[in-house]
Length: 130
Image (tube, rainbow, N blue to C red; front, side, top):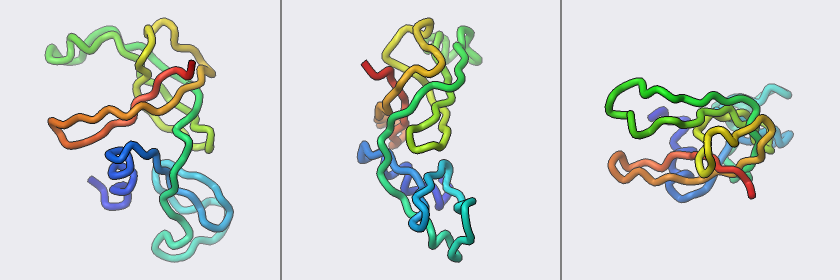
């Protein structure tokens, strides 16, 4: 795991959704990056990991109906989407908790934490907001 992203993955394990945020102007980033709005302090000193809402909306998606490998045949169909977070950054993930055919552009979604004990990680999925 890349050192810069460890706080993101650790936050997920605690069921917290962290994004990189500029301490000077408040701009949010995913993945971790330097602030594009002004000069930055060295060694990412202008930015820190802060808790975000975990809310957003679907801006693009596809429905995968054919498993790429036989081991994944039970996982289809599934929705892979680009989600514009309320804070501004775009993240990709799966949409769960609804029929794939019900996913729409601009659908509001909320992060859902999936603990995967076999690999010792928590993954962020998104589900429709009721």
